Image (cartoon, rainbow, N blue to C red; front, side, top):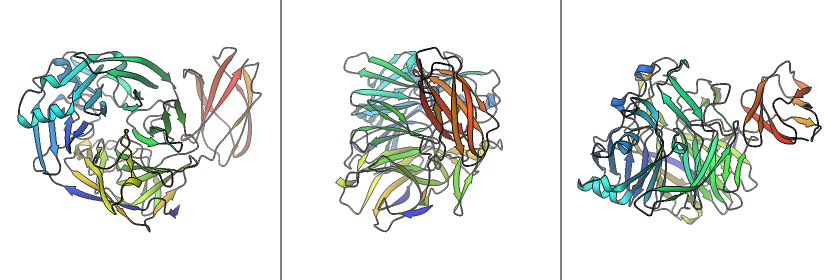
Length: 518
């Protein structure tokens, strides 16, 4: 760890109280003229372990809220007047959403469906006219005209995230989960990870919503993620895109991914040379770009993490507990990444399932990254955090004490204060592992692998096709500290096929290599 002044601001959180505002987590939010439009999510805390008690229908949010943080007021109306398809989706949890000008697009979500008489992932894409719906909720007039919805199984995802680059929408990761949650994996549900980036364009101009130019990119290893943070980015070359930050779960273990994946309109790039330790689950986050130094800063507020600091000591907890950490990942002009533990913390175990609502009065890119260099004030409000899960216990799920959690009604104003002496503790996230393989190309189904282990540890492997299909997986045994050589047999691959071999060292360091069989 080292102190580095790469971000010359202090982060300040100030609570704002709006009387009688309900707590919500894992909701959808849009905004217009400083007012927030909030739909869906849950009114309770972390889901229970027991299948009969997890995600109860009674705690679905069946209201639409408009919040004016400046005047500390809110308005609400029921979704009961909407058609069944809209009503069922809009009271679900973990929907994906993106606001494009005045339109809020909403995808998927998970909740009990009266129509299906079961918990389902909704196969819906919905568009919402944000300004008109806000006005209708505030004035008490009909909300019915301000929604459009279509049905297609490509939208049946929960725990995914939705972004937009140029004219193309990107629906990233997530899973389809139908049935009752069950921590013991008893057959009360079916679950299929997307393992994909699904891209498409949307036409919202007529009376009927439609989508086109649909494409899928599959990667069973690097895109096997849900409940992560999709952080908007400005890359060093000036391109706008996104970074998939962490997320759960790895294929063969209930641990989060630590390395990020960058998404551009040209494709996706797993950044396996870097691990992010201090934020591993969906939480409030914001992107800030410093054009003068070509540095991209991503801030993460609380949530859940496999790692956290206790009295200056980095603690690893594989139960992935609630944390108070506020952290930053900075991408430098050469593309390198570094993580920082900020000296300020969340007021409690908060932030999981919360959203950061950026201040649109500040200059920002179309993907909502704030333009730091266009702001001359010494202190300024970058946005607000609303809701999420609050816990009085660090690990309530493992102790079967989810009753110690609740949905948070708190709002925090987030301010940056200029401080040229500001510093934070840097956490080395470099990947110390690598391997080599030869011959490459190869005519046989066997190659030789060499690798040097800085310490003896577990090694898992995956073999995937260039199209992202998982061909083989397993574990390498009997490796030792220092130099190792291994004859590796490639299973289930055809001749004249490029495949990818991925090694996972110590259940957290990923290294992937391409090899051509000819």
